[in-house]
Image (tube, rainbow, N blue to C red; front, side, top):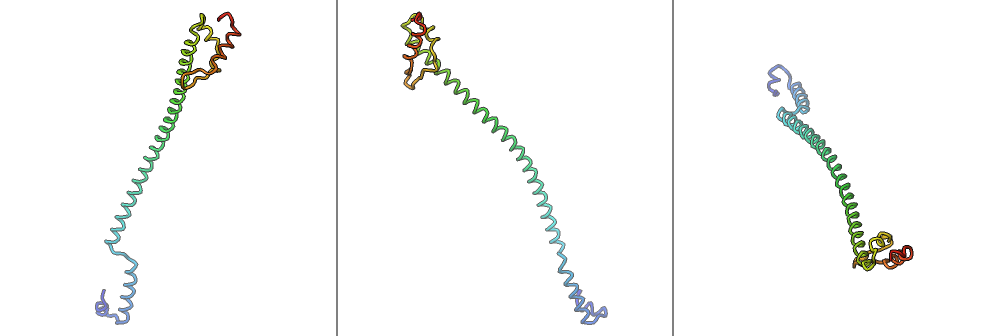
Length: 149
């Protein structure tokens, strides 16, 4: 409303100024409809984003559990592979030791029996293929089982 309109209704100029000031003060509290709609639309968008992000977080936490179980499985398999490698290296060492000792004992009649009597844990295989402690072990078997030589 305008001041002229209020004065036409029979109000004094002073009263119409006061009324217009009150109306102006009251209108400052309200926001325009376009602004209200814009804020409401943004609110709905943000709520949708929050809901969507919560779904993603739930999905990622599920993936995280799968990742943990796969990691545990991988570590278990790596450990198992390491153990298998140790066993294979031990078998290779034993086979190499056996063949080298058998070759060294080939001049004796009962080479296989002598080999069975030897304590292989006392023998050390070098990277060059030499057996350390072989002579001492052969001597130990020779003194214990003279009839094999």
